[in-house]
Image 1 (tube, rainbow, N blue to C red):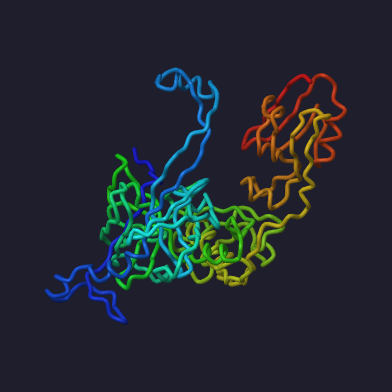
Image 2 (cartoon, rainbow, N blue to C red):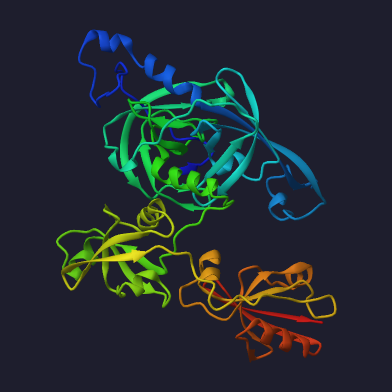
Length: 464
């Protein structure tokens, strides 16, 4: 069975051409070019690819059943927790002379100590400026670093299948290594990474542990993407690797420079699905393609631009979209606050509108309430559902009411979970956090709380 090995970086390959001021994308045409190989290109690009050593402290449980294949499943939460230091090894790419570095979230996320080692063995401390688990990207800043060698970013939309490319990284911790191959696919949105599914460049270059966060460059030495994962049966490279496109990396660097510590992703406020052959035939389309809108939040910028459920979005910001992931990618690389051209089909007629890219609104206000020690379930934190909450917790677009943002020790003990939507308390409907607090303050000894948890409706009963 296939599985995704996220910590195993995706690698890509390059052409064997001499570097010139205006290098062309072509295969070697002479024996001299073939003999020269990739040496000039590697000499130019390799100094900007670094090794990253990260330490993080995690809480682990000491259980006598941890080595028993049967009982450890029943005693996962048995035993006391204790801190344990975990080490991770990966790669990174310097993107500016002042020491901004891109790597993967799974390499540096949660790290308490990060050391960056250059090819010339110089070593610098680094801190995470911006990190995003869903995209599996992180931007670091080298501390007290002089002018650094760096790679320039290439427009990812100009990358073509069949291009030669090079992957540079530190597989297995053996030292900087270069592998070659071709770009074997584009717009891969079915590969898992981080906490979700993203949009990738695919390559057939050898990928192995430690390559994560390394560079995928073209024959001009420009960064195409950041190696991040592989598709594998055995845990080793099978020639199907994935890199995060440079266009998205550019937005991460821009936001890091603006002082954001988490990535601001534009909000579509819509639900949709890819169009297969059956859906295309039903809609009267000549071929499958695009994203069918199945739902729109009233505050969605797409709804404000006039789109409706049943419309088919085919292009965003000049690029085709064939999945919701591609839509989010196109919006993300356009940049927050910009306006993008959206082409959609309605009743067989193509229309084009401009859509403004916004953050999910905090309207109505969250009005967060936290119960005190004198109240039932002290520490329980409740908020009003709004578009920002919907996006943060991946709720259905029509979600409303009160959400559990934090349980505290007592609410967790009775069975409440972060992300639960409160539907009722002892038979009384709950619509606002203040209302929930008032009802909880008037409870007797028996309590019944009804919550929506994903697709399930759950009733929790306990005594005070």
